[in-house]
Length: 365
Image 1 (cartoon, rainbow, N blue to C red):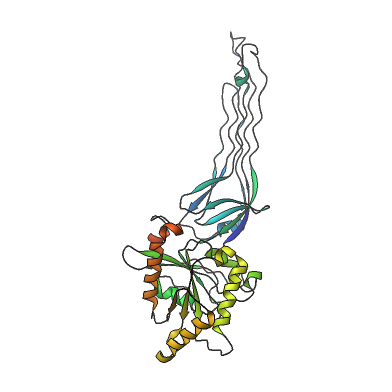
Image 2: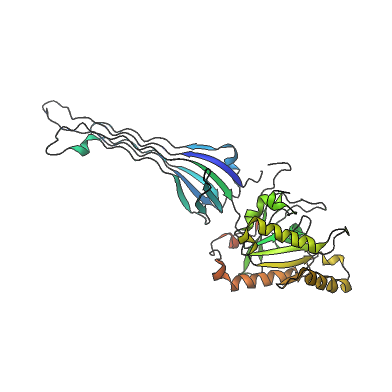
């Protein structure tokens, strides 16, 4: 299954049925009066957040959704039947926007949350409603109201507490494999990760958090270079960013400090709010350095990078330093739970040991 995090759909609600203008006509009852029924309500289209769905692939080919119209009213006080609603189940974290104006209409941030994205038209009134002492034989009735029609843009933003940020091959996928049950693809070439992966990190029996791994960024990502810019939106819901840096690159021409600055600059260009999120520096691949080199390399990097925030030196492949990092993250999230607007206990952070999103096939747009 391919990972689809964007889709455009057309939704059309059903029209309301027309009211009826009829009169009671029976033997020996010459003046039976009006008995026209009302028209039925048109079907609405409702979006529901479902935690069991993790991609918008269902909307890749099925793009047009149209509800049935309500039935017309009939004589003998018979009202038309209302049409059934159409339920569209979407992943938790889906943002629904107007495709033409870009205005955000709904945000399905919680499981079970639902919104009417196209309201069905009301049914018309039969002539029974227009009867009065001065109008005993009304011939008026009303037509049903038309249903709403919208062109909508669906955009999935995964729900996670911590987001991983870094260049391709910085070790993000190896890190998430080391601390969680998620098993993203790991290889010794750039752009191995083609789609976001989620991993649940259980620090102890009662404490856990969700980590999101997105494809690596390169310089120029804010303008569309590389692959990671397509998934930067998935970091917008995170509470904390971990900036992973490879401090022991195989190529001597690669300067970790310059690459780290380039990534942060791309983050600022893409979204100022994302750039202002709390961010920790994680220096990875220290296993490739001798014990004597590690302390000096870390100190030099922090000095040249002019970093004053939290910094951790780890080896994702051996697990060295990862446990201390996860405990620090859990402590930070617990201490700032109220300020950060943490998810309630019934959210995905406490319901699964692993959530891995399907991979995007290579070359898929």
